[in-house]
Image (cartoon, rainbow, N blue to C red; front, top):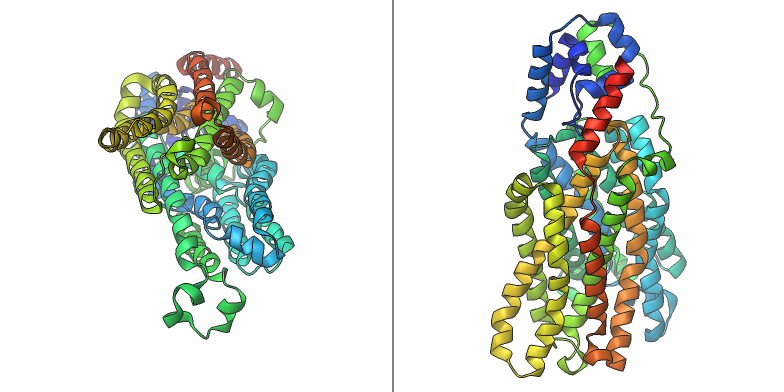
Length: 516
């Protein structure tokens, strides 16, 4: 891959200007030309239109660098593991550190859980701009170090104030996800991005799965595993340090691997390095991105895609918050009355089903019907998916237990196909980006908004479910009707998604006009 970029840079810079925007995620010649125009004019030679076409085809058909994608997916694990690892023990930790009553612990635990997303929201655009200016790799490694250290310290907090400080600190450094998304975009082509982002989404699901497991299995080791940890005073004093240290160790190992093996993907940085290597001439400093955040939002199609991504995030966070409570709540109050073991099986089924949809179904489906086609299919399916829970409750209320156990796994496995919308909206973001140079900023803006949604939506919808169950509005089903209505809003919005090919043609005409 690196050799291919060097060859393009050194042999046909004029041809590179002709490379069109069908490959907006790549470090293409067009990317190079936008940042090193003066340098190119001094070293390039005339090339033919045929060479330009060959360059286009080579970039579009470039194979996915699977090793780099795997390293980036490993880095993707850190943020969800750090976020979810405290969930099993944070309530008890708050009660012990703050000498709180049981009724008050929920408020502080919810606050601490949300602070990660709130602080992440405030700094996400900063991380995007830093990655666009300084390079993807150094900013990614620095962010990973910060999350690793802050998460390791959380388990040693002995007061509510310390818990808040360490949680906020972890959120401040949690810029990894946006940089990873940007780097995967720049490693991918139009043909390979669906597969790449399917792996990215799968890695995120693994992090969500393993985070709570690490927290639950390793918390209070002297109580859970007295034969191993009895007499170790450190873990008596800090009963939640072990899961934090475990998460920190995972983060440290992944950070070291990424620092050694991850390749830089920022086009201007690659242009600087490859230009000097091939010609012996030092290219000038890359031009700074001229688009402000507001100009980026006003670019064609950007605002609509950003809104759609947050609509999808709202539905996802709401379902994630309500589903476990619904599974646990008694049948009479509108739930399923499942045992902890049955709930874990349902969660496992959800995770497995999403993995199948993302890894096996999404890539060929996206190739066949396009990104917008996948989004529309998911948007149509979302209302039906959210109507499944009340229907399952009605089956149990009516005494159709066998029918429930036959239909519930099938319906849930099929419904999890809506998870493809998460990957599809990321591809839409890539396609709508005005230039590759602002891809980090655009991802940062999207993730800042998502962090804001995540900071309030779980608590909001879980509370609405509790109020609904207590008051028995529509036999406890009112919350699902509300979610179905919100999902129909996504169905309507999905029909107005921009035509990415037309946007590419517009940008290509603009670039060609500037070159002329």
